[in-house]
Image 1 (tube, rainbow, N blue to C red):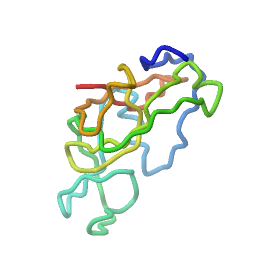
Image 2: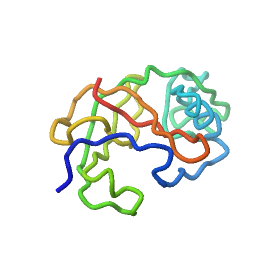
Image 3: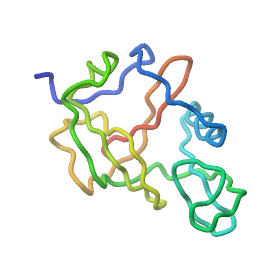
Length: 144
């Protein structure tokens, strides 16, 4: 078994770039600059995630973006021991988690830069960015 410490991979890891939807362009552009933003509804004053063209709470069709704290807690998680693709083999074992963000929404991501055995429900985490090809960066979380 590999060392159970999960580390961010470099831009040369060969990991895929997430499929992008037009309504998420701002999210990914800000991530490239290592800024963590969330969709924000100016009508009902609420954050939400995943990015979409309308607010899931009040159905306003004009959401904007707001910088988020980048802090949250582990809501749920699983440890992955078998890489789904060869490009993830160096990461095994790694933590796939649902993070409850300080602003309220939950998002699926990875918990990195820690021993997988140390991850617990309720553990405080903060955002970090994993670089991939062409300067693309994916928000991940690490222990706070």
